[in-house]
Image 1 (cartoon, rainbow, N blue to C red):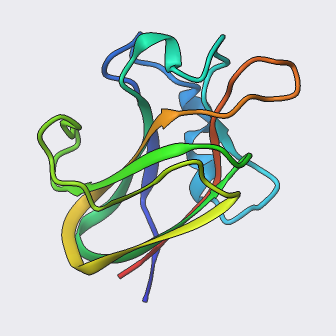
Image 2 (image 1 turned 60 degrees about the horizontal axis):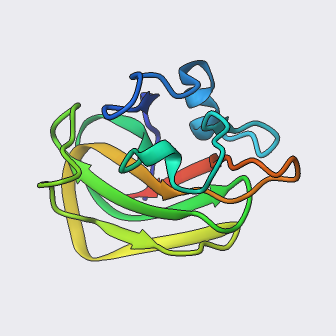
Length: 145
């Protein structure tokens, strides 16, 4: 069953706490022509940070069965967390699933649904863009319960 999130915000706890936050809702707006993008980096390692992310609020705790991530480009490394905390800890929270060297669209399905109010898509490597810099992004996040 499709889930309609209530909001999406940028999540940058290891940096300056901002990662193009005004664009975050674009990843859940149902429009394939809009996207949330990270800031531009000089390399794929996110300036030494362990990652940056998009935190999606489902409005209430739900069983999350799968997610489909549509990225701006192929080549992302991402880990997904489902939690009841609006400040997930990527070092200690359980992983829902992950992708490495992603295609443009990736679906992550749990062995069994995981309950939580928040879904964090945590980017740990972003692809090179035509300018030679590096930038990640999500065009759309679809969640099934």
